[in-house]
Picture 1 (cartoon, helix red, strand yellow):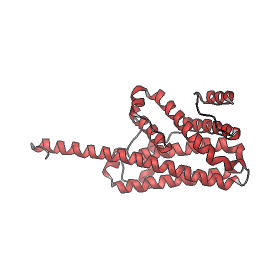
Picture 2 (cartoon, helix red, strand yellow):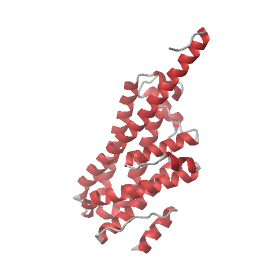
Picture 3 (cartoon, rainbow, N blue to C red):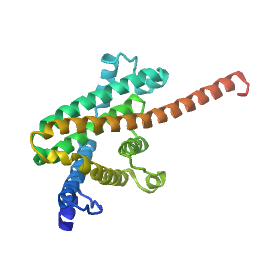
Picture 4 (tube, rainbow, N blue to C red):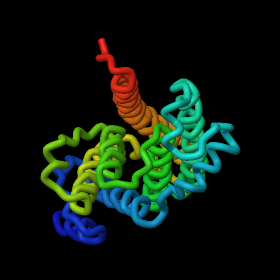
Length: 251
């Protein structure tokens, strides 16, 4: 069993450490789940990033947001951004549900590719939420914030101390590892119904649907909080500039 864990970890470039589960089948499933989630998140980050320019166009055309750049979101009502974010989450939920229903027909044979695709769907959704709330992922700090949001969505606490000690290309793999281990344990328990082919289609549909909804809501809350904090700072800066221009001090 240890050899299986090491082999699975080497496949994705890191060593995933986890406590063995009592049941061998669940232990094997958990190992596979961790690898699938870690691989899916890595591929989403490396190869299928959201095109920020194209998504900005979508925000203008499909959602009718008057934006020339992403900085313009700080001038829009927060309720409007929330509506767009909710729409993106619902879209991710529907896509994940359809994907889960299709792969669910194969039972345990398709759980690994299913979770790999599900992780990519979820990560793209989180990237879009980041852009909606004005974080463009142009700097290391913004990229780190994206993965902190992903960890928050997965229920993993990433301390700022870890970020301060790590450069971004080391920080991201460590975050992915923690997400994979945390999520692997939870998913292995819930996805056990997928062991039965055909009847697992409905189970896969429902599990994927609620998986993306939960992650989307938590990521949305994370970025919304950061957006409101940035909006407050901008308002303070404008007040200070205005006061400096008139020669008065802010009260």
